[in-house]
Structures are given as C-alpha cells and as structure tokens.
Amino acid sequence: MITFKCYLDGKEITDQNLIRALNQNEISVFESLRLYNGTVFRFNEHLKRFAESARSCGIDLPAIPVLIAAVQKALKAHGGADGFIRITFHAEKIFVMIGERKHNPAIYKTGVDLKTSSFRMPSPGETDVQAKTGNYRLQLLAGKPEGAYEWLFLDESHFVTEARVGNFFMVKKGSILTPPAVSVLNGITREVVIECARDLGLFVRETPLTRHEAFNADEAFLTNTSWEILPVRSLDGRLIQAPVPGPITLKLINCFHRKVNITCRPPKKVSEIRKSNARSSPSRIKKD
Image (cartoon, rainbow, N blue to C red):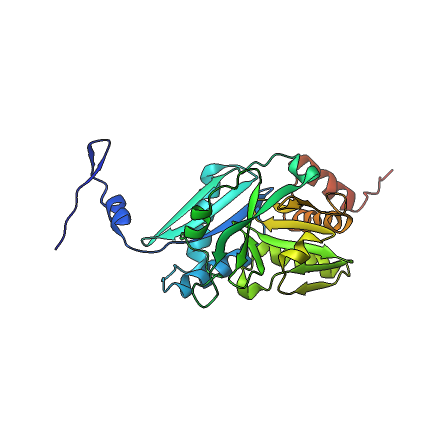
C-alpha cells in the first residue's frame, strides 16, 4: 500500500478528498455552457455531449438528474443571471465553475486575426476529437499566437480543422462551408449556427477546406460557447474580402441571438405579471 502526504506552502493538507483527487491518474471530462437570463442555453444538448465524452473515455458519469442538480445548486449559490459555466467530472467528483469570460466588444466589429499553427491536429484514429477532456496538450504546446488572436490548426493532410477552442466557418459565393465534424469537435454553437443557416434558407456544406480556400473566403468566423459567433478579419496576413462582419455572418449572429432570446426569456417581474393578468382577465360589468 502506498500512502502520501501532500503539502502546500510547506503546510500539510489534511483534506483526504483533495489528496485523492490530486493523486488520481485519471482523465477529466468537462463541458462549457452559457447562462442567459437565469437559463442555461441548450442545456440538454450540452449534457448529452458531456455523457458521450465520458463514455468515450470509459468514465462512469453520474446520472443526468444528478448533473442537473449539481449545476442548479451551484447557480443558486452563485446567484447571477448571466455567465459562463464549466462543469467538470474528475476523480468521481462534480465540479461546477461559474463566472464571466468577457471579450472586448470591438472584436465583433473589427474581426480577429488568425495564424496557421505549425502543430498538426491528430487524426480521428489517434485521438477522439469529439470527447471534451482536460487533455489540451496540443493547444498548450501551440501557446498564444504572437500578433494574432487565435491559431488555426491543420490536420496531417494540411486541411483546415479548428481553432484552439472553437470551430471555423467560411462563406464563399453565398454558401457556408465548415470542416466535417469527423475531424473537429462538433461544438454546440456550431450546431446552432448550422441550424440558423438552414432556418435562413442558406446552403451549408461540411467539407474539407484548404488554406487556399480560406485565404479566398468572402467571410469567415469562429464559434464557441463563449464567443458565440466571432468574425474573422484575416488569416496569415491575408485580409478577408468582404466587410467585417460580412452580411451572412450578421444574419447568423442575429438568428443566434433570436434563438437565445426565445429559449432564455428573462423572468417577468411581479408588476408585469399582474398587468398581463389584468389584460387577459374578463372585463367586469358594473352594476347600477
């Protein structure tokens, strides 16, 4: 039997649960979510992917009602109506982090610059790109791009895959193109954007993309839970041809926000409920 003592700043840690968690040679799975007006957007879809990530990694995840309860308890303790949520399962424990990931509003007007990383995205046969795990080795090795906002990774065949923490889309001649889900994480925001495009009657195609095609895109943007839809201004110094954000990107942004507003309506104030009830109540007949 092997026993350990754990120290922090020279002081022994006596919390056995923490020691066990630190000593576990286990992979963690996580899911990122957004809270709007007190409601988690696409909660069911996120939980489904969370469960699939765990299953792929051979992790026994608690039942969905247990996960929902953990998030609800954390939200009640936190008390905020809007925010970013990260739920992690590690060493048989559920951790829920809630906070804000603020982005400069200017980047949504000017777009962001991308650089192609020299690190190659592993093939689906080498790693399960659909499982959201704590293993961000490639992203950490790539580091933060100097002189750009985000990296764009290629696969071993030099096709475009994704950014460090987001999916890539481009627009060409009115069509929306994105790398196939088999080679990238199929983000929930990615799915919503594809849904928006079809709602708007726009053509969407999942297809391998080269840098040449990306260099000549009419529009481009990134998606993830935190960014939502983030316009791209350039790739490796080549400016995107259309104004940024482009007209199709703007349509998708507006559609996305409509879906958020429909799903995550702000709770009515008591005074508004009373007014609504008064308007819907039958008028009283005054008796002489």
